[in-house]
Image (cartoon, rainbow over all chains, first blue to last red; front, top):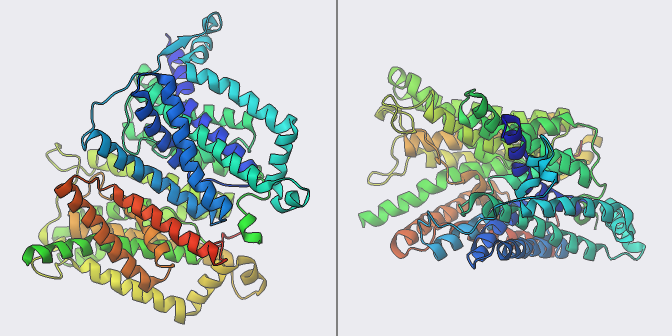
Length: 304
Length: 303
């Protein structure tokens, strides 16, 4: 495989968990809720995926990852949507909870060291014909099967959001939840379900890290991807297709190191590690004034 | 007896950065700035303090400690200024930017202790150890408790006084409570106040970092902070953002975390359980606030 193909493949691989998480958060934010606890859902998913995949199947692993993400999102939903506690601080606490609880469970269940434990990983599935397309075939269609689920889910969410009645209800809720309630739409229910959906996709994102990539769990392995995903939602302007594109840009930045290695260029490895974070800052600064968040984002609790 | 004294000292040593960083968080939140970046500001504070101490420690003797703390404050403020400027010019939410800056600071430490600041033998990923005269003096003999704890108490009381008794404290509180009202009242330049809040908050967190290297670790290395900056958010919120209350909640968390480490040693109970307890406490505090009808602890500054 050529250096450019390796780079593109790395791009898609790194973008996959980010896109899952960001797509879920897009739905959450379009319902008017900002879930800063996404990081917690990702690490919970990573742990849930790790624990469940131990039962022998990568797909069971993904179900476990999804359920773990939903579970922690349910905690957020209860406090931030039902009780209407401050969304931002609840989300921060949920991230802390996810990171702490998974580390605790991991050490308790697998011993303080826990190193060297590994699970069955999801290998690459080549899509016939498509993977033979020159240049982009291999990067896009020689990926773990879970990536193809993402290819289906992105257009599905987009279509649902813009072409169904329920999708309209979601977007209206995000703009003005109180007006929506007056119109007879169950705004709170929409927000609760959106948060759970976001948790499910965040959980799958964590599952991807463990089951399709690392093959093992490590404390704090989500490494800020939840927060990067939130930035990706802004860069993608709260639109599923924009968000997918923004995730790819982030994937490309992270994959640059493979390209540099292939080219024999050297830089301190930390330079590559900080790139996603620096890019997040530059990206958010660059989009200044051009992106409009849902008008009701994070605001309902202020208005009562 | 001495072992118990040492353990009590360790809890207060652990509480020291939590109190100072807790003040940083509380100051920001009271002023309507969502600074989640105490962790990063603490780390760059530690970097600056280390750089100053190692380059001038022998020359300056005792004065080096003071300079190190000032350097830490400046570095922390500078790190927070990046987020302030991103917000002022580009409307970048500080929640996101400060978290990104945390990760950048972590990797910056990693780069420095394996590169320019690495100890001379180039074996260990850490800096040289500070000479004795460049360390913070011990407060209670027989313990590791250092002067940094006293500084934390002074800062807390000073901040409480500033909030209550000074015009500046009033401006910060007014801006935090309702930026639009503060602006309409015409007496307060909310944009300037907001910038100062960022800088002071960052400076406090930077001081926490410099106190940690000058008082406890005596060197810079990776994982210097076990997430002090994040725990500080819990410390500040549990205390209801009250500076004097933060002394108590900081000590409480210091005991909790020192106890958790002891539990892990003695009974193999994972110390990460402490962060689960912290998260639970934050949510409990929020729920109580919400049930009482206060749905936000802070108001974001609208630009």
